[in-house]
Amino acid sequence: MVDPRSLFDLTGKVACITGASSGLGRRAAVTLSLAGAKVIAVARRKQALRSLSLEIGANAAHVAGDITDQKQLKVLCDSITNPFGPPDILIHAAGVNTRQSADEVSRRGWETTLALNLEAPFFLSQALVTPMKENGWGRIVNFASLQTTRAFPGGIAYGASKAGIAQLTRAMAEAWSPHGITANAIGPGFFPTELTQAVFDDKERADRNAAQTCIGRNGRLEDIDGPLLFLCSDASSYVTGQIMMVDGGFTAK
Image 1 (tube, rainbow, N blue to C red):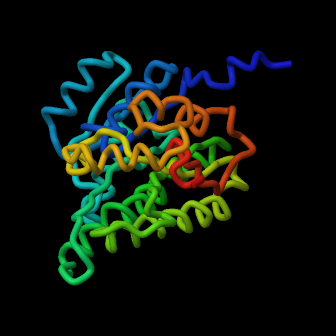
Image 2: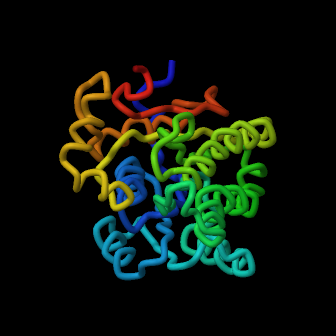
């Protein structure tokens, strides 16, 4: 029998994480590096990426770029592949929420939201999946949301994109899992990140969200480590097309 601890070992793997300059994306990069992976951090903010690379050390590289720019996708993928080779693990943590009400949603806000939250995860995966197929091993982790299945005020564009992520994840699994590539999604509850700063700045609202969970608190960054490591490792080799809610039981009530 294989030592169960080895199932979570990512030594020899290369992981690419988008949205790695802050929040859950940054946390993912640090966590996977500690599990042995070489990490490629992708985001727009160069200084934040440099800081992350310095923190992780020799097993990290970073690429500053716009993952929604389809014209530059090949250049971006070449930059991702250059430091350590093609990624075995792809985590789509980049996201945006304009928080516009249904009556205020603009065409630009709608397109920006869907381009980053829904289109980019697919087209970047499509561009990087071939070496995973050739190796017979790959892990794709999308980021879903509470709004994948629930409606929130000011979340019509964001909610539409995250509902789309659920079906995108299942479709990726159908297409690529026969080649040894699993595709799953993590659905975080309320975690203290830049994306949710407006929520946590309102103490009454934050407390109300905490009360909605079964555990009785909002998420801490370390709460994402275990589920993420599970989905990125051999431990989840027979799990694909699934949405794992990491929300303290928010959606259970």
